[in-house]
Length: 75
Image (cartoon, rainbow, N blue to C red):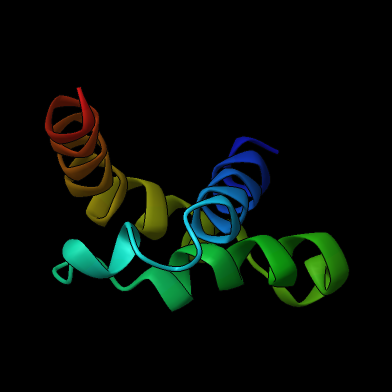
């Protein structure tokens, strides 16, 4: 559920900033971040626990680092 919230949050940020903020942080695959939300929300029977675990283990730490940088940059 938290991955759904993360994806939804970044979708909203992208809309609110008229697609200008996220493009400044190209080392994140934003399409995938936002897309995980759609898959988990609508095709959750096709996801397995190992895939979710790998997303959390391999990608969330970097996403958190970039998110903190974004916050610092806009302040």
